[in-house]
Amino acid sequence: MTMPGSPAPELETGLRRVEAIRYVTPLREGGSLPGLVEGDDDGTWVVKFRGAGQGAGALVAEVVAGEIGSRIGLPVPELVTVDVAPELGHAEPDPEIQELIEASPGLNLGMDFLPGSLPFTLAPEEGFDPDLAAEIVFFDALVTNIDRTPRNPNLLTWHGRTWLIDHGAAFYRQHGATPLAETASSPTPALREHVLLPVAGSLAEAGERLSADIEAAIDPAVESVPDLWLGEEPEARREDFRLFLQRRLAGQAGFISELEGDDG
Image (cartoon, rainbow, N blue to C red):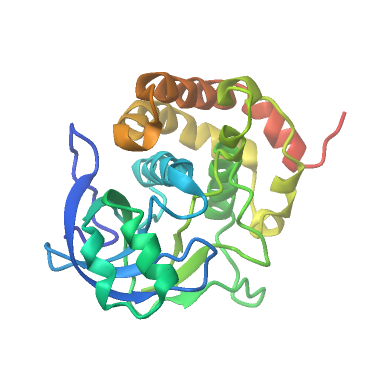
C-alpha cells in the first residue's frame, strides 16, 4: 500500500485495484454509509459503495477531484478501486448494510484509512497557512465542491497535516439534465461558505501557482475512472468532465470574483 504523503504510483490503467477480504465496520458519519474494509494488500480502506443512494456519480466525482488534488500536490489520501464480493457483508448484522454490499458487487471506491486522525477545527490562535488555504479553496471552486463548510469541512488532521477527504459532492451539477460542461461558468454561491475562505490568501496567485499542474492532471484524472461507473457512454462522460474542467480553469477569474464577493 502506498502510505499517505508518498507519491502516488503512475499507472497507465488508472487506480490501483485491491480485493476486499474482510468487512470491518460501518462508518456512520456520512449519509452514504461507507465501510472500513481490509484489503488483500494488507491495507485498510474507507470504501464508498456503488450501490449507495448517491450512486456511481459520487464515485466518479471522488476519483476525478481526488486525483487532480493529489496530482497538484494537495494532501489527499490514496484512492483505489476495491473489488467487493456480495458475500462480504454476510457477517454484518445490520440488514441495511448487508443490502448495500450486496447491491455493490465488483468495483467500488476505497480511500486510504488514516488511523488516529482527528476532525479538523479552524483554531485562530494556531493559524493556517494562507497560501495552502487559498490553494484548497481554488481547487474546491474549480471542481465545484460545495461540501467543505464549517458545519461539515471534510478535512482531517493527521500527522501534523490537514488532509482533504470526501469529494463526492464535487461536480454536483453532473446529476442534472444539462451536460456538465455547459455549466462551467454557472454561479455557485454556496462556495462562499468554504471553511478556509476567511483565512485564504490570494486566490488569483493560487491559480497562477496551480493552473499548469491542473491542466496536466485533467486527462489522467478523468481516465482513472472505471468505465463501469460512467454508464452506457463512458467516453462521452469523460469528455464532458474534461471540457468542464478546461472551461472552468480558463474562466477562473469568474469564480475568483464570485468567491471574493466582487459582483461587479
